[in-house]
Image 1 (cartoon, chains in turn brown, blue):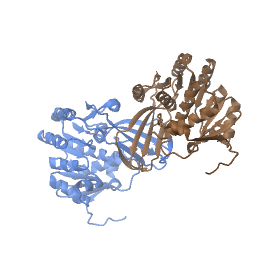
Image 2 (cartoon, rainbow over the protein chains, first blue to last red):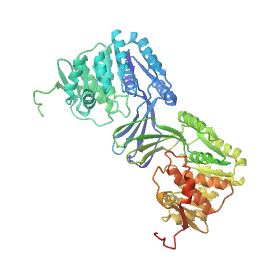
Image 3 (cartoon, rainbow over the protein chains, first blue to last red):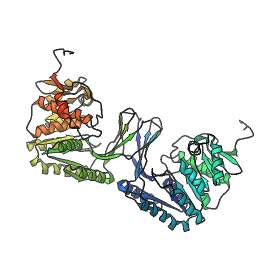
Image 4 (cartoon, rainbow over the protein chains, first blue to last red):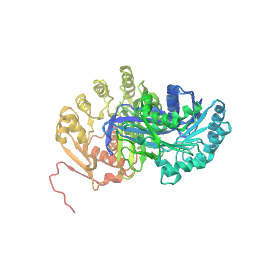
Length: 313
Length: 313
């Protein structure tokens, strides 16, 4: 079973409008409401692809009731710790003319220490059945500094490898605490490590203890950085679509293979890149297209930096 | 008692962000959630100014539960007809750099005929205690053509005058059905009547049967058009602030005076203009500043078109 933890879940509201004009009033049909947050997106994708998952998170206030109801409808197995603070909301305005999406994310309310303890308790209860733990997304402002090291340490003590997708100082904490895989994008990596070259930044996370850094590059695909090699995977031609949730789909791919005992960086990189690309083809985060198999076949994988110029034919 | 009807209520969500950039991701503190829709804003303002009010509307789905809870907290007396369709949501993004507000309004779900009948039933029950009926805001797409004439006719049969603030064909229907006061803005008036000059448009509503048209002009104040005169009220200097809900505050002023038996157009115009201006000073719709008394004293009121050039000193 893949155990996912989402420390800062969100009720995601999505509206489609003709054209977003700042300062103007727009009319829209009823928006879509979804239980969101990166860890829940990872759980959705893995569940839809047939993996056994358990999504652990929190829910509070009326938005939390709505999140719980939507999650129940989704069929993704989950445990939600009831918290006093209202679950944050996130809104996405999809501009149907330009195709781009404007997002506002509330920062979220920090649970109390007993509420965090209850979340840790759910994780401890579930770890005996887990093959991998995924911790994904931001932490609410004011979250205890000890939270991420505690989660990772608890999983490692139980012999369960940990995949972390977060940003800022928490990324360094995760590497120090023994996360096996980290999945930053280039901007997050530069910001967290303070190192201008993302590949050097990824190597610094390996030096801190991570086994593998999956560095997502948007339309340029993904890099796998380990202690001994760096591989680059990208599609043979760019895709257009909605990149929201592409990183979460990559984490889901990595988690599914990890749960099956796969550790080969190239296999992990290929599947993560293919599922990320397949997420771009879907309108909402937390879903991937069935075309992922064909996309994986279209991938070009090579050592990075490429030492031989590619033949343009 | 002032009886307000809001046929298409909304759960209003307001976020403040540094600067709205289309296509970008923004972080925000928790947004404000309010029971909204023009009629509820009218009831809020009148209630806060000490008037006796009853707000009638609908509520459905989880957003309806949230609307009902917020309305209960507000202390405004109300009756909400439970409907199956979810109450629409409206989002406002306040750009703190530029000071302007970007709004997305869901169109709303049309209640069933029995649900509309229940709304009419609440109005019929409340009319014996009402001094004035206010019908404010849009109708959901597909609402029965007969709804507005029925509401207005029922009130008039009970001897209760009716103030209507709506747009499109419903504005003409309201005038035909015997609404005493209509409060369009210039763009709504031109669109509903098809007459390019707003004052000619207002006169066409008087010809259809209305006693008074309060024509809001934004920063230029307000016009009162009757069968015999046109008066213009405006502040001696412009205000800056949030114009959302300014029209509703003007309707509330008119309703409070109507409930007290006032019919003098100049008195109605002065109070409506002052309360509209006092709403601009407040961050959320449905509130007016206590400075309205001073603002009313600052008003310049004159026949329109002004026949004597104003002395620039």
